[in-house]
Image (cartoon, rainbow, N blue to C red; front, side, top):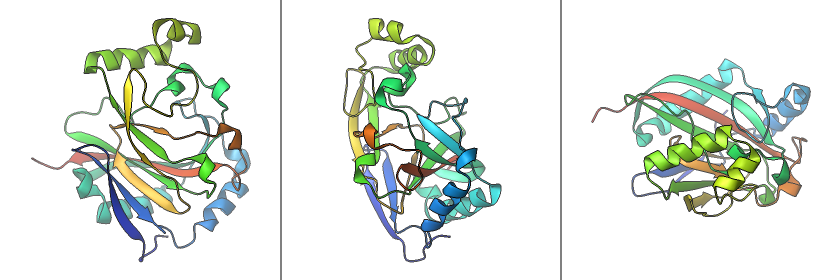
Length: 235
């Protein structure tokens, strides 16, 4: 699955955190387009998260191969000691900006509420070569923790009109800094590139051309997303 001659690089996000980038990651990335086409009718919108599109859960054997690579090359760099849980999915962003709900107007974090002894890591494999479909941007809050948590609860539960009345958030995909978050880093998408990062960091797809989105795996923003729950390295 993975290319033994893949190229590794590091992109700084903050002073404490980095994004680990692997180019030419897979030996046969085209096979994922074929897989997505074969299972196209099984993609569906997920009720358990705010992803702006459709998803397809992947078999455990795929997650196992990803975990092997993560364990060998990435896990310790992110401050993780042991992988406790992992799930993976194929995803295609499909929603136009005017169809987003308020929670999709902001960046997000993965697996909130993990105990202090655990940490969440994530990876995104880009399976498209249309640069208009964008990479991944990282953000840091401008407000303190209680205010930021209150904001995230509001956008997750309030109506569109209530969020517009109580905040200065602009409807649509988050593309740049606003009154609540500062964009500190954007990692461009590239065909057969996979990135790994700490899932507790606020992040969002850099979708500047939503008109280019499609549910066709060969035209749309097809990604392979994985989420790793890990124990922390002892300090």
